[in-house]
Image (tube, rainbow, N blue to C red; front, side, top):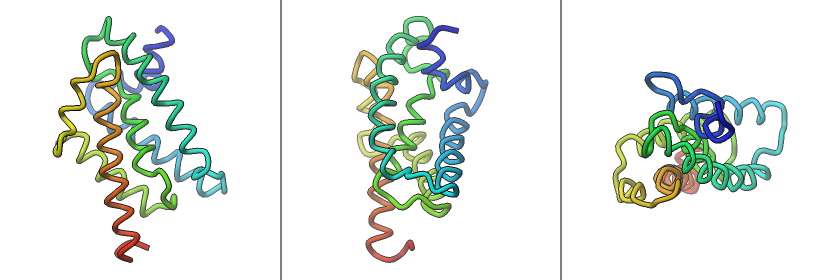
Length: 152
């Protein structure tokens, strides 16, 4: 497998027949939770990680689409980015991770509120941007839940 297909499929996870995107997002939840348990400064690393995944994802998605087709189910690096954006600038704990996962997958699958339109971007940007927006919506909802003390 080429470098770009490895990145785009998140090390082969996208090659799972069904649910590759959900598996990729779930694995990121496990990584975030494990990091929080071992006192890794995930909050300070997440913006840099997200930017790196965005840039690598756009590049690798564009290249992988040449053989796999537009926004192929095999491309799941966008779910990795979307899950990361969902938790940016939030306390990383089991509650925020679980709520983030459920909300992100809802927005990513249902694609309400103009998320679907973001897929129109070309050159790998469309693959990544719908998940960025789904992640932003998720993040905003969790921020509101925290600010209103509905989530502690």
